[in-house]
Figure: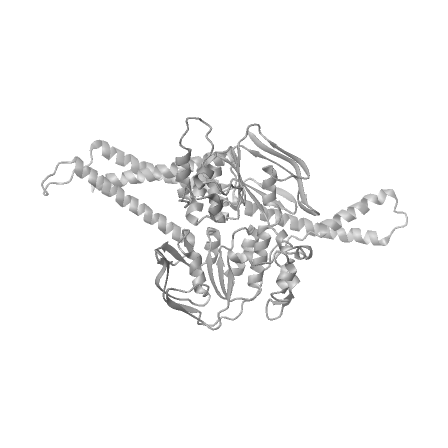
Length: 600
């Protein structure tokens, strides 16, 4: 294997806070690695250190000579006066290569960036992140580092990027909370947990299984440590008079055991056990609601009656009005016509993108929460102080005293989520709640929402999150068309793919018939249609024989790739073969349909 990067004994702290200690591992050509850690554990800092943008305390970071490195930062740098096209177009390495601007235009359009002359300083944060993603992909680096690449992408863009990174032979290290994305793209997972690093040679599904095994083993080891500690504690308390130097190892051992016994495997989990307030049978009804901004129609005579405990996902491309829709529901915006009839018991809890900026950065975390409530009712028997409540969201007493401006992006989002839930809403409206949240927090949030005794509307590009939470989807298709789809996102996507296949079959059949009509002279209607030639019949027989073989190979590869037992090289080869198989099967099916139409 060709070594691209070696990391030896890497240690980084910020003030008195240790982020990671003595990290050692290598990255090799073809690796596609997902980096996982909880918010505040230093994921972005780790990437910045590798990219040379931050110093570190000790250790070594050694790249292969002449390695081209591309890095997508969480907040990419830019020249505000530079045009979008100039920003995204890579510098030419070959004086005769004039394709750069054309390729940049093509990929910018793919990410819904259409004004090539727009100044970078005029772009929104989401547009800037997408432009920077285009720039780094077009630079064709040997080694690519991506920090939350799926943020600000709609699902269509995420799936395009997922397929691009899966098919392309590129070495990759990325931070993302998108679990489907991790599972499909990555063949290795590296986890930073309690200042240590753990490596898992497989995709996200494999990581989950092996991580649980590790935690189970740690739990068993912790029980042994506590038993040993009791014995050593008794010995220490007896205070033997002639302890001497030979007993020193037992004193040292005692302190080590004591330190280990304080390890709490569940101490870093978020607890969202906040009781919702009562919600009545009448939720709200939308009556002939319409809204448009000029020619951009968001809703057109839309009617709907919400039921108790309903959980709805909202999906659609950027700019179709998803965020506008949920603002209309709450009266933040006013419809052009029609109205909403809201039930008297409905209490909204709104988690918005704009809400992140509502905090006063000059305040401490605990003070911001106490301004909302000094105590929080968890259930009929339990009430927590503001400080106790924050501890359920991973805010230690020391972190509660931090000023808000010193929080990481994920910590800030966790604080915002806490302030939304502590008001005990019974109708949650969540606008992209998964951005910047770590996977542990996401999983706990999902568990909370699944058991939430109220209504939920969620806008999200996280397919895993949608699949776990929602009963059905509102699909915004643009120009006021909203489809109510009865199922989760994966089911909806599968239906779209089947519809696309059917359209392709129909187009192929129509094309084959048109070609046949053009190639064959007009004949009286009483004559039979032309039959297959000998060569075509043999081709059809070969396709009928070969298609099941290809399908079996594809199924076998899928099982092997998800088993977690393949080596990195084998996974890379299997991924490349899988892409070839998909193309071969599609072409074979289309050609077989053409021949069957002629034969019919």
